[in-house]
Length: 229
Ligand SMILES: *Cc1c(COP(=O)(O)O)cnc(C)c1O
Image (tube, rainbow, N blue to C red):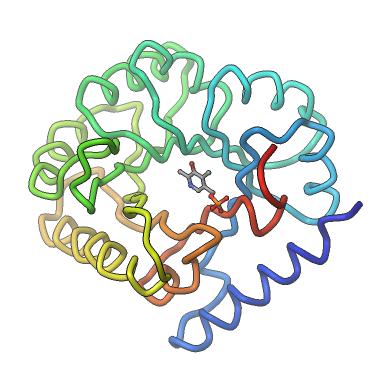
């Protein structure tokens, strides 16, 4: 089986959504979410044109990335990261999308320094204010970024959010809009060493709405690989 048609379909939808709101589709990076899919399936996705992959669990990702180390792809960590796992994430991932505390940022910075790496990160925001979700609350975002901006082995690139489960794609719009508004408010603060180029938002069910609200990275699993095993 080939994933080529699913990928083509998703890319066409990304392109249509971008053009419809006057954006350049090249500003939207497709991150294919491969959690729970084995390496041989992921390899087929790469052969079909996937360039960016998102993983949620460190141990699973470690094995998969090792099995695919002959592939030229960019790996993104999109799951919840415990501080004590930070050191494992650094050699594996180009981007960590889920930084939501000073403690975690400090650990990433410490291990990145040891590894001689500047780790690209996004700050995850709990835009839906859900008790069960990771992410910093909107009112705590600026303080967090100000504290972590001075970490020399971190490169803050933008923001990420996972909205509450919604009935329709349009129901997710306020959360995406809130993330874009927060990005603008952080830019206003002109914090040194902080770049706000990336907005990681939008999944299989709602990525077109996320693109309309400014997403630069969409994280898509099911629409590419099918229902997870
Ligand atoms: C699983 C996951 C996705 C992909 O979700 P789909 O609905 O399968 O597209 C995106 N982002 C995060 C953080 C995830 O955990």
